[in-house]
Amino acid sequence: MVTEDEAMRRAIALAARGLGTTSPNPVVGCLLLGPGGEVVGEGFHVYAGGPHAEIVALAQAGERARGGTCVVSLEPCNHTGRTGPCSEALIAAGVRRVVIGVDDPNPVASGGAATLRAAGIEVETGVRREEAEAGNIAWLTAVRRGRPYVTWKFAATLDGRSAAADGTSQWISSTESRSDVHVLRSTVDAIVAGVGTVLADDPQLTVRDLRDGTLAIKQPLRVVVDSSGRTPANARVRDAAAPTWIVTVAAAGADQQGRVDLTGMLTELYARGMRNVLLEGGPRIAGAFLAAGLVDRVIGYIAPKLLGDGRAALIDAGVGTIADAVELDFTEITQIGGDLRFTALLRPKEASLRQKPSDRPAHHPEAE
Image (cartoon, rainbow, N blue to C red):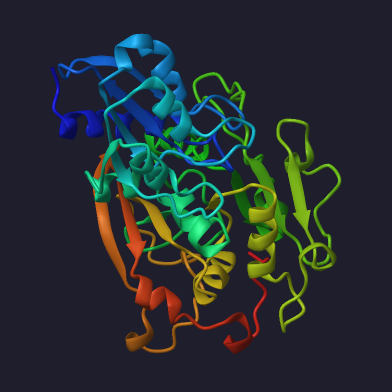
């Protein structure tokens, strides 16, 4: 027998298994408890178009779900898309009670709780809401804002350098950190870099196993911000390992400096079903995203090295005085190999006050 609180913790953990494969759908986990509180079924949403978490759990439970409790990390859907409404499936299964972590903000799919209540089912919402929201933060943020959730990832020395004075940067971070980056890449829908990084480093921007170099089956979309189309025909980002979008002004529109409109680019990525984007590349494109208020989360790998000179990890983020500093809240600090990895969220108020691209001094976010 497990408590509803314990079941929700398990549902949230199950939901995380779907990171990187469910877009444009959310990640969702579900446990079904029998009338006596025993687990009779569990599941998570594995891929878009596949059965939802509740349906997987119901299939396991069968008749044992009748009179029981459904514990689910996100409000059951209430519409028919590629699959039927989970709210109706729960009603048909005869569950007595539904416990929900976080409400669905998508107006197309929301309303499941109301449908369940109208059918006489007891519904409780907000159980472990903060944890459920954190586990689905990319999708929830994307749906609320109409653009993908953006994580800026960087590696730097303890004094904030991403390359030495002679331009060398391999390898600032440890092997363990680089492997961790590939795990991070596997959870996103797209990886963004500037054409300057492509010209300087010729990265492949794929998800790989560093032990043997094998490619993961599921690869994020590779996105190269390239206003004037300078990406070489033989660049590794153009190979067959993963899909690629070379974003030019013609494709995404131009800002007032005549370069790719980053907001327009993210809007197009959202329209293509992308909900979770990883920003890689160099310090100028990171600065452009930050100055435009388009970064939601920062993940940094800090190596125990000092260079004293060389390229900074961030350039021109629209900050002219200390009062304008981009403020973050740490959510995690841990050791990866010999490095420190931190995760931090931008404070919403500060992010909303970042300068718009038209307010920034002209610079070239692709020339890094």
